[in-house]
Image (cartoon, each protein chain N blue to C red):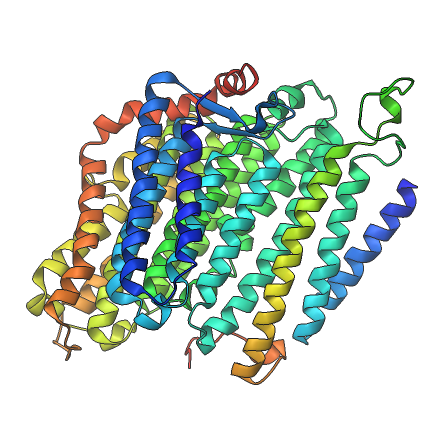
Length: 493
Length: 115
């Protein structure tokens, strides 16, 4: 038993609490926020190394044995996601410094980001379904403050809807937890995985599984429940949008992955087929939106929805290539979405608008920005050596081996639409007649561009060097496919 | 007793849905409050009502006499969270009423031109 896996949660909490004390000292705020996120990233990397060598780590708080105490579990999947999330938070803080504005920095912006990190890392690490609810609430609380942060009219209007949707889904979450507790008498995930196969009435468990799918689906923005996302994510400024797009929906996706591989496997024929169909519909819905708008932010926002569908389609197959592929695609997507929002943010600042039709000719003045954007767009669509490719390939292979081969064909075909939608930004913004751009100081541009390039370079390494990461990914997939590894690590502690 | 609780929970959910479907923002907030109360009562009922001994090992008390402590711990957490969220929602509603000049949800519809 090692307390190592608590550090990525406690360190940002500690730093956020300190940062709350002096909101006006912007320099110190920036430095401490970077130090806090950096320290959390370091501890997450150490944790990943530890999990990779010693297997699944588990801590039961207060040393109460597993089904009674609250357990925190770090398996390769959660450790990988904690590392990715910490990297992204650190880069978002770097990107925020020149873009977010002094007024926001002085009113608790960095503490809110670090609290969001607490919630995300906690939700990835927890081994108890009620604590998942608590950590999701922590990250939602932080996201409420971030989405309304600055108090502009569209932000206020959209955050009312965002808040309302999330309150309803939280109430459903509590209700679903209540039903699960009444049927199984436990809320520890490992213990649930032991108890659920012993219960003979699979009907009621299937209902509960679908309820959880609805709850997590609200967070993950799956097909009928994605309606709140485009409007709400449009309102806040770009760094916050990058943070949300990269992390928030992915927590829902992770929760579906965890519950649907670990314990809701009693009626795979119904629940996982439903998940697969919903995933395909999600991809369609995202594609329609991504093609419908002439607004750079909207296009990338709808691409979030497409990616959620692709990942969940891999999960629904419940075979080794499908699961490995969705883990790989999940990590790829977290990085590439943040990178795209960073780039779109730079483009929007340069033109002073997010409307594609008012843009043009940027390739003449900012050639490097143009090629980096094209590289990222190809990575998003999964052009071979780049990072979207290996994950999508495995997901498609999983689909062909699994029951839903037609889904793989849809995923393949929609890759073209993703490519079209993202290259459209390139064509409109970088080609054509040059439009007058807003003058931008060289140093400010570099401050925005350097974190972006780092992130894009990371996605390229992740894609080209996919072979290097494969042992980690398949290790994570193995734990998902063989719940006994997870159960043993938690209950034998 | 469980039957009465179920009816009460159902009534709370019904009232919450009715209130949340109305136009006025303050009614919607009251509706979300009722919704979370319904969910909390559901949690309590699902843990099994009855059991009149505290969950402490003592002489002459069998397992069936104990009250289940877990739902109470869960409800406590959930109540605190819903309290915090509701107060945040009230502040947000007041602030947006100041800024946007209306609390009618029909007038708060999102449009493409965010102006």
